Amino acid sequence: MRPSALALVPLFAASSAGAATNWVRAPYLQELGSRQVSVLAESDGAHGAKLEIARGGDAGPTVTAETPSKEAVIELTASGLEPATTYTYTLTLDDGTVAKGGFTTAPEDDRALSFVVYGDNRTYAQIHAAVVKAILATPSDFLVHTGDMIADGSVPAQWTEFFSIERPLLSDRCVFPVIGNHEIGMPTSDGAQRYGRMFRVPAPAGSAERWYTFRFGSARFFMLDAQDDFASDELTWLEGALTAADTEPGVVHRFAVMHHGPYSSGLHGPNAAMRLARIPQLFKKHRVDLVISGHDHAYERGERDGLRYVVSGGGGAPLYKEFHPGEGALKFEPVHHFVKVELEKTRATMTVFRLDGSVIERCAFAPGGTAGWGCGAAPGPASTIPLTQPTPAPTSPLAPPAGGPAASRACNCGVLGTRGEWLGLFAAAGLCVVAGLRRRRG
Image 1 (tube, helix red, strand yellow):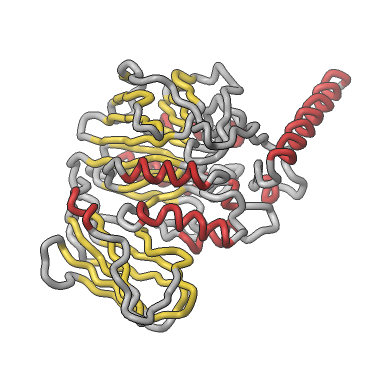
Image 2 (cartoon, helix red, strand yellow):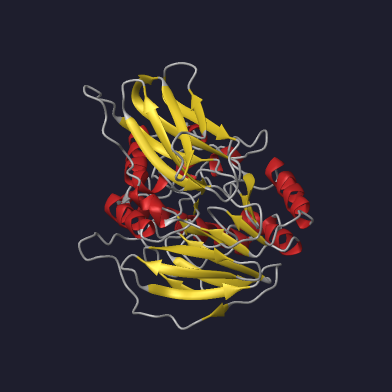
């Protein structure tokens, strides 16, 4: 559905003489649906802004929206659009600065569509940029992000770097993210609040943008905050959202997306809270086709408890080796990568790309909650991190911080740097040994 013509639309047109606006967050798409879209941006000063949206080939704007006052943070929403239709947009500031982009609205039928999955971009900006470049060369209708965009969500400069690297991608492909532990930051930080201000998603009241569901064509997505203990409002909401989708007209495919998933063979391993809350059984009951997560920095595909799952955390963070084998993994490769999923009425096809363009594997599966994968031979040799990049020791999950459930939500592994991470690993290992000795004595 991504028309090649959009590649000809420049992100920025020439600004008027004397205009000197710098973007803290260059314009990017949010809330893309069948009949609306939002354009968000942040500049280094307060400006009035006007958004003009035109159907491809039209001489004038189809829809316009303007800010009521001068603001540094710009959020403009256009509604009344047509489904499965290609548009271009122009965002003009009151000093003459102009930004352009394009998008295609979601369909309202079961026609074919595609999306790209990626995540864990933190740590290495050069690798993150290479991931973005590779995704740009791979057409898709929208993006799904598995979290950990930055190392510490409370640091504004890291968000500026993220949006600078993602600028050419997010200008005409809407990203639907899930929150990661690094977005939350330390328990006392404002990382989660900053994340909530960056992204506009169809979140229910009380979720603070942390969990939500959205529909795109024939697919329904359930986007979760996996740092939760699931003895919470999120679990109640999830049960209701899954039940509603059981009989939703036109829904063919169902995807559950979270940062730390219930299945993983990497260093962090499975999400124990999700297992304890029986979230996998809930997914199985409501015919979820694929569970998508990140957190462990590798590519993994598997099946467990009658559920297919994929771990995609290869967007720029240090790579992890297989650490918890035997959890249902069918394929594991520690590599920077992204995943493209193509949906048709009777099947889904998943292709996993390394950054050099080679394919790790290509697999198909049927919708409706049926188990099983159909995968071809993996073409091309396995690749590693480019030799020009550092190859660090893997980050380690730290022992849960004191302070109750709210504190334990922010794992923050990796924020301290490599030495701190390894100290955390040794500390966690020591705690495990002590706990084991106590159990034996008891």
